[in-house]
Length: 503
Image (cartoon, rainbow, N blue to C red; front, side, top):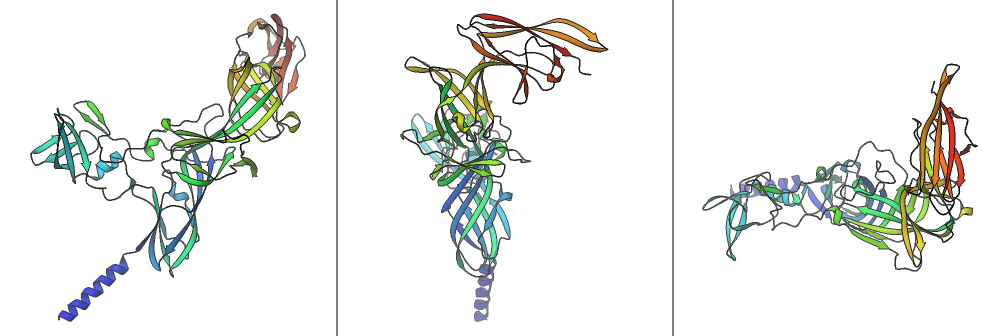
């Protein structure tokens, strides 16, 4: 009888051991590549929003793992916190993947407090510089007051004269300090393999940043450009092959709001007085995106290595020449281009909209993206800062932005509303000809500068076909109907045209 019971026990242990799948942990990638895509809804003149990075990244990792025979759960630690698990692809496994899971909730003040509900903690009180500790049990959720039960009764933490803190005795089950993706698999044999894990993740963005310094003649400029990378993710990718993609890739979904990606902050309310983040025993929450570190690569080098451009279908890919760390909650800049004496035009541009209203003139920087004009490279979208020399210093005269520009295109940046060049519009006369109404428009253009300026009036394509009877010749430039002229110093000029009704 005893022998039978012993064999039954051994059999039960064997069955349980066989039923429980093995677990293999890959703590970090051996090699990683990060390709960052710009936020699809962010225009070129909108700055990167460090509190909510709406772009995304394609992350490709290589990991060397030992897989046992049979049913196994393989855990990939150190993936991006903003991972889209449905996009994950794992290749290189002996028999493929049965299922994928984004494991557990990340450790945070709120999740640690919520996960310890009904469990023991240590209540530390400081009264008159004397510290006293006693065991307690959490009896409230993270929303509201922090209620704990001690041997003496129920206590609302930090709602009395004493200074009170909670110290946790351990990490609650189900919480992980690292973002983790797990896959379940059945392997016909034990093997050590190199696998590739690829996935998309939110919480990244990038842009180009241009600095143009005008030469003393005002007809050329030195152009310096940087690629600015930003990561709002809590995971760092060390020694990564890094790339960025210019252009807009069609995606149906959008980046989640910050708290939709993880746990909301922990805030207690005691008698309507908020007490925030009352979890000193827990790891501190990640710093807000506004405090991101900024790292500039190549600034101190005499000739910094620049990103290299490659074609990617209709898009442009820019590859960082050296492996670099895409750090958590950080920005980094890498040199894009450095061109000297690029021919540019500084002019004043106003626009007549579809309703026939003329806007205020803007100071504008213009260049032609051709090799013969000092450029001739694809230019990704981003802000432009323009400086003009004044003695030994350079003074900022305006900031604008450019969209993605291909080789051969006209590059134009609106820098500032003009203060020395003004345009006034006055309706003069209206009537009808063969049943079609028309209106004459008078323009008064003034230049208060002590030097001549170039001026352009551009007509919206929706009104351009209805414009006639100009007081001087109109031209077509870059697909637009344009009135181009030079205005002498301290001069005034009267212009006029007729607009017919849209019928």
